[in-house]
Length: 329
Image (cartoon, rainbow, N blue to C red; front, side):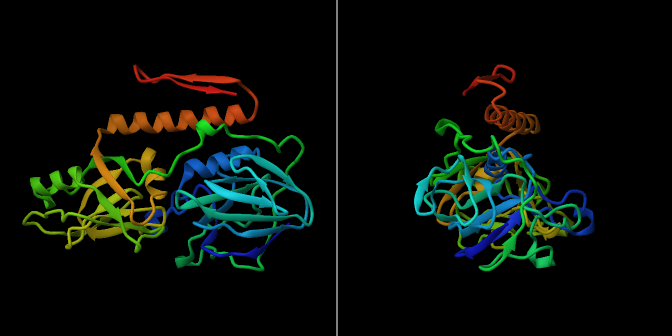
């Protein structure tokens, strides 16, 4: 259905990831930025977890071998047959059309969704690529992908209002963390450093983990090593050099370095979009606040889905005494 003509950077098929296999040593994988990916799927009428294309920094050039409806999520220039088209909007492509996706102006990952999703054979319940274990592979020029069946009429022309599009241009962000579980391996000064300093994303970062540079986090006399214990995406390990590593979607399932905290799931998509050279700060939050943030994120995405489906013109959300968010169609 579609043919990849040019693949200038890492391009993979991803969905919401593998669930229930971490106990067997299989990473979750899936979208690095689930927020943008799910919106891309909603724009073409898919469920949020439908398989799509994830690209790093620069998108591919694609030839359509049949009619399709597509949408791009990302701050990027997009051309269809040489004519600029808007991202965050669903478009109709016919057989023979050429789609060119340029370089992201901000953020690190972009997404291309197709009505019906990408047809693939699930491996351990997911189509997500985890190349290190042979669960799929990065795509290359010449690859041909089949799309799932979808009635295309009515799926084109859906547009996410600009005020609802995520902004990943900031060169410094703050994310919430729940401290622990290995705090006894850090001095009070070490914990204070972690919560007060800005850390820079290094070029060695990847889908497995973001290596950070900045002021050294001091370990206690117990040292950096622990008995190997479980890891989850968001875990912040601190090896002997005192420089934190945040585990990301392809993170291994166990590790032997002490963990100073876990980045809350509601904020991980923002961290994932942080480019090398950009900075992150960590703010301690409670479990209750982390749950509230996740609920806010999920309610926002559900409101966006209903808005794009034309089932409401406006959506008003209020959690407790927190601020209201108003969506206008």
